[in-house]
Every structure is written in C-alpha cells, then in structure tokens.
Image (cartoon, rainbow, N blue to C red; front, side):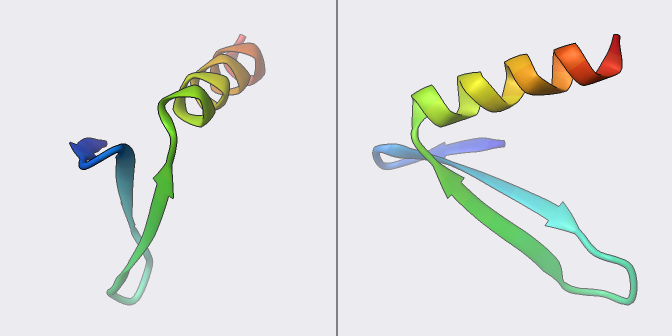
Length: 41
C-alpha cells in the first residue's frame, strides 16, 4: 500500500496480468487491517 494524496492506494496483481487498484481512506485501511487480522487468526 502506498499513501497518495489524502488516500491510501493498494495495488493487487491479478492472474493473467493487470492489477486491481483500490483507493481508501486511512480509516477504511485500518478497518481492512482489523478484518484481515480477525480472519487470519
């Protein structure tokens, strides 16, 4: 993830080429991190 302007941009490589680009606010990024931690364990 990289911080660009006021948001955070996450670029996820996709199978077959290309990438998924998601822009989110710092609060959304924090919520995503919490959800991933809960799912992982």
